[in-house]
Amino acid sequence: MTAKIHIIDLHPDNAKAIKETASLLFRGFREHNPNGWPNIEAAVKEVEESLQEGHISRIAVNNNGNVVGWIGGIGKYQGHVWELHPLVVDPDHQHQGIGRALVEDFEKIVKEQKGKTIWLGADDEDNMTSISGIDLYPDVLGHLLKIKNLKGHPYEFYQKMGFVIIGALPDADGPGKPDIFMAKRIR
Image (tube, rainbow, N blue to C red; front, side):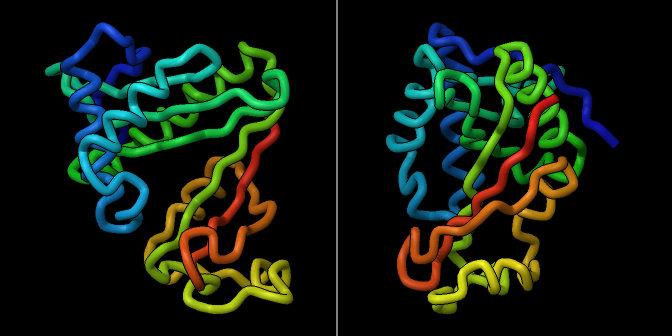
């Protein structure tokens, strides 16, 4: 069931939404990626950077106007490729279709921008998959072929959205903490 939300651009003059988005980012990643945005100041900086030209920054707001989700994106390769970074949904509002709606909205905007591919990195800092907590070398691709989701890692959400695993960066966040790369063609 999709929650009742509206997806809108995050504007630089909307201080309330920027503050709520930064708080959401900090809270949403605190458990599984604590080094990503270790404090609210780092989260505010990330949100403010998303407001630059060549970026997409969209928020999901509920009927009260509160931010319950955020998706950002950065154009690369002359706009042919877009990095989805980040996606976060308020933990109290997850599993209600908000993440799906944000990704679908993002894809629509990328297509309008004539983008051809969306890619993302899905860090695994706390052994949520079978490729975390181990040395992936020298057979990184062999490990990826046998990947298993052990604790609800979001890579399976992205697979349901049509993304495929295209690689991994071993030790991206420290020994045994890979970043899983995924991509999707936009038609």
